[in-house]
Length: 368
Image (cartoon, rainbow, N blue to C red):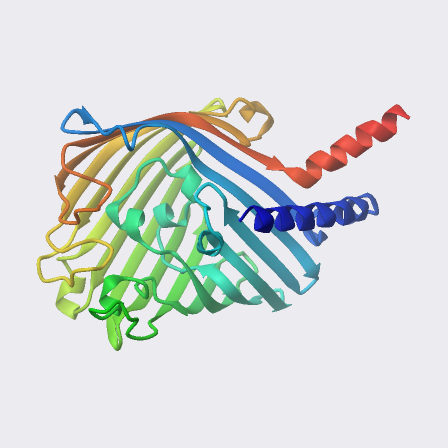
């Protein structure tokens, strides 16, 4: 694994040297062939159940350490890659921790076709948010396998709204229901996703309809309505996800609701409150992301501080957050447990590596 990482690092540095030269030759930001960013989040965690601390889950943690590369190969071809490094021990882990790696072709300004490892297009703002920006979340979010191989086609309006159709591997394709008693994979499972995102004045929508195979020929259907309202420095988000393998289940027995409200003070301090609720009926199939008989509520909130916020920069962030769990989770390995509590404080930082190198080169040249 060390040799693999060394090769990747050397390749990245070689590309950096070429990219730095190109940047000095007048490439526009939107036309760069290579952009590189590093982002990390470090936390102190205190997790407890019925007031008793879970020492294995507590302490100082590297929650996220990501490398992201993006670029425009030609005016019609772009690519994006994000890799997580904090959980990599083997070459297999490296592949599994590739969040996405895809190529996008835009034949016109209004159409885009993409292929590779992608985010499964499921609606909702909690789901849409980068993991390092989520402190505690719904039981569905904690378990969904959201990064899968797939292809997608999008129509983008002149105003920036987008309608996307995607065919991907099913998020359930590695779940226990797709394996026999000897551990052999039964078949390939797919998801068919229709996704809409758009903004009108103070309202933004992220909606989807998803048909997700959990067994060959059997589909779990999602209808997800993500709603965001902005009023000055205040923001409210409400996600409603209905799930069901039958029409009757789709309207009442199996759903998740995620609500979050936050307010930004003086461009530096963001305070927020959040509630999530997951409910799954007894007849829902076992072995999926939320187990039958689960009814779990998480309530909490927190504060974020941006030291560079006055300059419109959020690349450095300090945070503290707390959540408490109420209800039943029938998944013995689930994240949220009844009377469980979660507290975290930590630091997040992001670096535009190319911009940093370019600034350093400019300083060196100015001193000559």
